[in-house]
Image 1 (cartoon, rainbow, N blue to C red):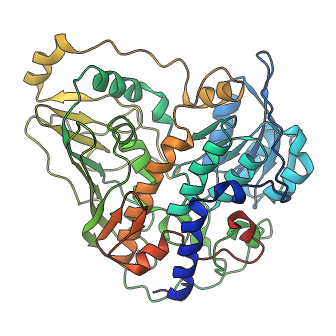
Image 2 (image 1 turned 60 degrees about the vertical axis):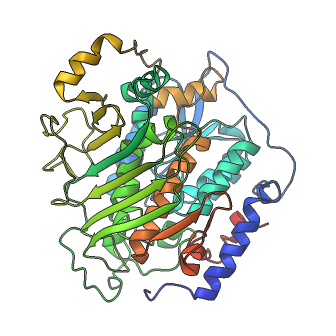
Image 3 (image 1 turned 135 degrees about the vertical axis):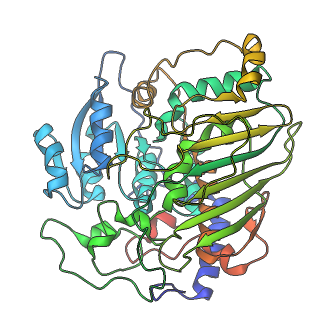
Length: 480
């Protein structure tokens, strides 16, 4: 284990606490000040804009803010970032000069709680949870980037909170869940076109930030001077202490098990989201790290092949999902697959254009048909082409999306729509990613009891469901 891991005993103790917490959420989810009084709910009227506070205003956070603002349905009333004034945050600050500015979301809620209707969390994966849980406890609608949270039990608590606070609109930022693939997948399942699915291949073979790093690493990177604009302690939120290094910030956090969720957490929400929802997959009973090239205990492998096994559900047969990442770790391609080039409709990452040998996507195998799909909102096609022509007259009409993902969230804040990726749906999906990342980190097969939500074959892995204990002054988010 790496130097910043806490003891196995601490992990096990934390896991026991969270196991109890999962069944005692009403006592956990009190207000920020510890009050048990119900939060004051507020829906913007039909002709009103939603007052939006934004946590994380650079890089991806900035893109979220622009997309939400461009709907014409919100006012940006507060901007919060731990690196406020750095080059990547200044453009949004200039765009909204009248918005109040903060470096600590807790201070923002304390000072502006009665002026905020909704909140965004466009921050590193490990910081989604404290922002989201605080917003929900205060009755504020919440849009959180994917994956929803980093650990299994953080996701569990967010799912429980969504049930406890049904008037809070929640949305995870897998924007394809409001586009053509969402409506097509649902329509094809309802019409019996997609049925009896037994296997899914999901593949993302673009170069990642950590590719080229030395997998024989023996320690975390050395301490560097902290930039003058950055509040490093607030950046860490509840994570265990690390000395500042430039390879932790501005997207680099995605490389490290302590902070991010790797390629799976980044792209899984754009590739398997519709299959997970409309095939009612739930949680796997087994996760097997079939291949981990360049495995080490600090950052993600150069290539990963993960096998997720889901049991039969009602009339639906058991289904396996095999995940492939890594530039040369390409999945088997079925006959009649057709063009494997890049899909120009996929939004480019912040690092520039996607470069890969195979378009990020999925292959869905049923007992009678095979489907080929891309990422985000890209629609499915039946392969080979001859079978697609045969099935064409039987395909149902697919409705158009009434709103994009951002407009859908803001209309839900106003009570006019329901979100399409609420935490009750996106939370279990994110838990699948948490289990996959755990198998990557420990390089062990995980056997999971879906009913009890426990790992049965590895005590350390079971403790990791809860993650490492939060730092001092962040315990209140987990108190029973």
